[in-house]
Image 1: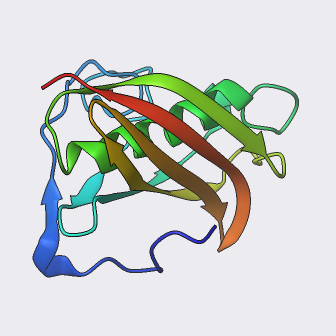
Image 2: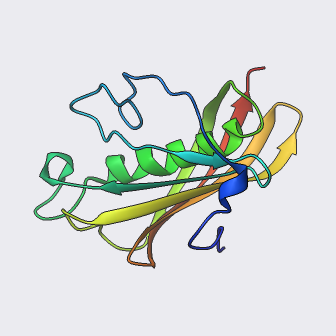
Image 3: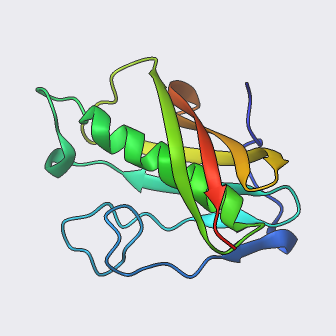
Length: 144
């Protein structure tokens, strides 16, 4: 599964209002990732780049899998937020392809794949230097 290419078209990008305390996207959470997601409302996709330092290490020189899952989850949520403001994850399935090294600059992309009433399907990929390291599929519950 390949998600949107290396660059998103600027005319449809928008910055989604975020909760400043969120572990993944909260700019005021000093112990969080502080990922800044862009969404594309035309194709219901999301994108962020994040540098993952030692604060997020699991095993020696490897980023904790829970941090990787959190980034993939957030990419799915933001892709869905391009179409609805209030959504939450109902289920997340992560596939780890390679251990993400500490210090890596990662790019994470999400895509809304299917909408059925209140349960939507989204997918996300996490890459380092264009190489796939992890991917996820999520069932997202639309609240509004």
